[in-house]
Image (cartoon, rainbow, N blue to C red):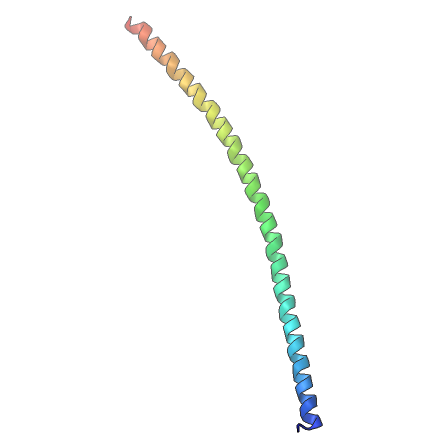
Length: 83
């Protein structure tokens, strides 16, 4: 049968182990919170970039239409000059 001192030592060790586990869990939770906040920041950045790219795509499409129009006019001018 274990002595009272042995039992007390085991109880203290178990208490220390439990405290260490709680500290590790706290550290993990803190890291998860930082990651969650960073993911939210990155999500906002990606949304902003998506909006910017969509705006650029719209502008590019408009420029492409203008260039197509200029090509058509240039072809008409060349056709008139050849006539």
